[in-house]
Length: 273
Image (cartoon, rainbow, N blue to C red):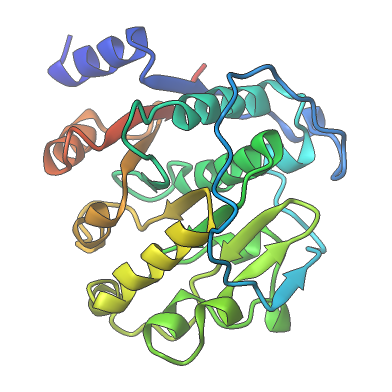
């Protein structure tokens, strides 16, 4: 048995690996299905004097991606698995605030964006907390499409904020009735790494920290792109998404050796049997 498999097996025994089994479309309900609340330990409320950057735009998506089971089918097995992951994150601070969670994966097509979106939806619905979903994948952004936003619905995004073309409030969009605030990637990022490395990127995350209880950041695939190294210091914890039968053990090992082990919150094994 490989060293990487030993790591995953141990992490699973310790509760740090969550296996997600994607459901076929026929097992999904329609948008607007009632949310089933689960019993979880109480979470302290956020302070009443938290500064607010009120979004100037609200959108009622015409079509939410079927992969967002937290919106389509909250009673499905996959949605319950996301609630389990959400519960672990919400109670993982142990004295150290965990507000900014970065979702990454070794390569493309492993379910990173789907995990980020479902996690944000679950936190917003189950805990009724202000939750922001940030699309920091400036190279191949997907989140606006997953929430059914296109054309004039998209508006400015993170790129525009970092370039000084829009304020943060102008770039935020409240997704109704999902209860999540989306900061889309925006467009026209010719040099993504340069934008992510600016002081304005840290200032933007700090502003989001002041307003939201949880910030979920969807990042580009980690290997071989350098963006992860720029974003990692901004996050409190990292969740690694890998895909069963697709992600190579070597790429997982390379990624885990390149990130701060203290920041790694857990591993999501996507499409596990």
